[in-house]
Amino acid sequence: MKIIILQKIKSNNVLAFFLSVFFLVVLVENCYAQPTGAGQNTIRVTGTVTSAIDGAILPGVSIVVEGTTTGTVTDMDGTYSIEVPENATLVFSYLGFAPQKIAVGGRNSINVLMVESAEALDELVVTALGIRREEKSLGYSVGKIASEELSKVVHENILTSMAGKVTGVTINSTGGTGSTVSMVIRGATSMSTDNQPLFVIDGVPMTSSVNNVGGFGSGNLVDYGNSISDIDPESIESISILKGPSAAALYGTRAGNGVVLITTKKANQRGGMKVEVVSNTVFDIPSKYLDVQNRFGFGARSYTDKTFANGVIPPYNVSEVAGAGPELNKGYWQVQPFAPLDANGAAIPTELIAYPDNYKNFINRSAITSTNSISISSVTDLVNYRLGISNMTNKGLVPNSDLNRNNLTLSATSEMRKGFTVSTDINYTQNWADNRPATQERGANPLQWAAWTPPNVDIRQL
Image 1 (cartoon, helix red, strand yellow):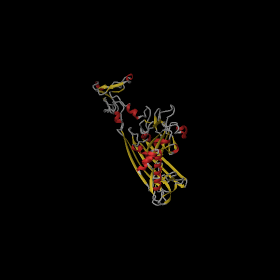
Image 2 (cartoon, one colour):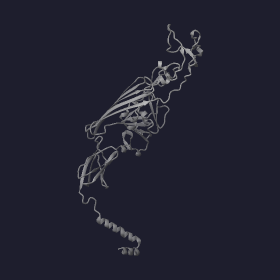
Image 3 (cartoon, helix red, strand yellow):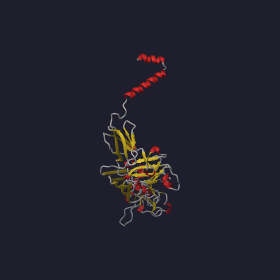
């Protein structure tokens, strides 16, 4: 045989030789190859594919026989039908859900429950009108924050918890308990408005202005906070921040500064009632105290040396009231607030000494925010619901500025009949505070009052 081949190579051209070998190989393969499925019994498999979260039908699920290109997809009712070998393995895959491999095992009916994939959901974002799309398919920038990031450190205002988690978003706060928190996306665009984005919670638009300031006396403005602080952080599933103008086009002119889409948690697991309890405590410590002078008393008030003749206190000159007072810790004596009284009821002069820690003694050394919540959820054939109750208690850095908030959230969905579903979302909030933070340099601002207290007065006695 080798001799014959060599002779053919010598006598014929190389191209003809390779063509002969090619056809020979094809002929041998056809002789020994067995058609797919030959010797195997084929059966028709039918079934329905639904979500394991809420039992919803899933149209468009891809179903492929493993190792082949044979496949089909579910129809609008979530049903499928496919003819496969009786010992085949079916692979079910759907966007946002974990793929499943199921051995047929001679069965004619296979119903499948698809389970959400955490990895796949990370690639999806909620866009306008609550539609979920793949981030790479969008023509604009979208920032995403998951519920796990918000619950790591719980603050009284969810905007404070979002600080530093999304690029291009600036979040500022005055720092007072229950005060307004400002959120600006991609910089301020107007000098006459507050530049705040539109907040949309489960499809319902909500404004959160930073101008919720009321008057208390002449020139005393009090900050009552903004409405976004009423949202319970534990009830949030995810947050999508639509940054571009085209992203917010469906919400009109109100969305000129961007849109913040908040999706709340729903019941998402079958298998009985689920109870979840969460407790969180956050401590706030001042990073820096106001630097005030402690060398001189306030103003040129009357004072005496402790050896002044007969202890007589001369009256002060009105023209000398302004300016710095006597130097402290130098042996000067003066009638001061809370001075002791003699037998005749007259105030006794005391030495002028400095209290350099007045500002520190006024402010609490730490603020404590405690959040406790409990939620109950269930998925049944009749109704899916999630009920959540939470309590937040904040003891602020400023004395008598405590804030308390109770939240009640309810999300329920019921399929009255096929194709007709009724859903409801309820969010009830109750707030009360000892004192709201003041915003101007008037008597209602406790921090300004503490800074202006004379250094020779012990603020702990006030």
